[in-house]
Image (cartoon, rainbow, N blue to C red):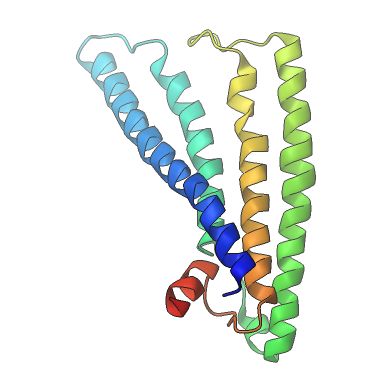
Length: 179
């Protein structure tokens, strides 16, 4: 692992740990929210008004941020049968190409498009009916997750471009092996 990779990984480690804590907290709140919604519906006779809305938007946040963390660990499904048949140098090029596509999508659709969505939503004054919060806060997870995806793409690219990296490992496991 190069010195630049080590420095970059150490710099984004607080982001990773923060996201992990945020996701655990979000899941805990989601579970309590859904349980309260079920309890209030069946035990109290009427579901609390805000529980369903909170559950939906927590799930959106957890899904997008969780997808970014899963991407970092290379946990997403992939069809790598044909890539596995390629020579190692072609596999490396293929992996770099895929990372560049993910970066382009993250930068343009999630960061740029998401930022425009958030700005327009705040400008329109849309408010969540039950929670009485501006809808822009819900949509702000789109550009946030896009930035996180871009950081992780950069981390992957640094690993792929290093001389000693093998494609069957994640950047994090390559770091552990070199320690």
